[in-house]
Image (cartoon, chains in turn orange, green):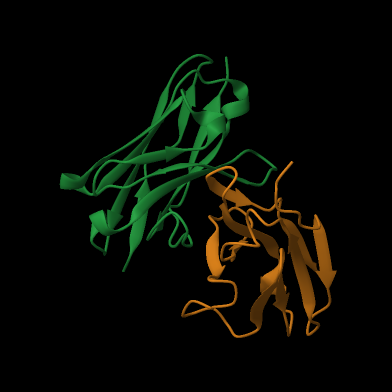
Length: 110
Length: 119
């Protein structure tokens, strides 16, 4: 059972906006920056968002993220078929003195 | 470009040990930590620990303490993760990833190494 809670699945049709949530606590999201990772089928994860809401170069601005209190969220707008992937939130946890990942959200593009 | 290249797939018997390597290129090796994350088939990502190649300091997830050893060789810009006492539950893809410190994000990731534990 991960300390970060994500809905197991999400879906949308092309062009839609889809939110993905990540709920934590004061020992993790409440104190530390959140990063988000996209994992395409059969591939290694890749960084999508860092420092709560910053996009690395090369990540389309269709991907955005925010954080409030002990929860974070990722939003994908203008949904495309190639966005079909697993999405993970992650952050440091003070009580574990280590990193924690959310359980992942599998996004389907219908 | 910044790249992490991992060693190839392994098949091990229960009780054995496995060592996975992670060769870095495109950046100053000693400036960034090397973290290790694993993913069992059909499951999510699980952080195992990290090493600071600058001084060899490690921080292991409690679940793996006593079974995991992370090392690095700065002369060949390579990090290593050794896991002992393997059981079938250790069957997973093992990833290395770079981070500037304990609190920063992972970027990039290695391509992953499949370790299969089976009798």
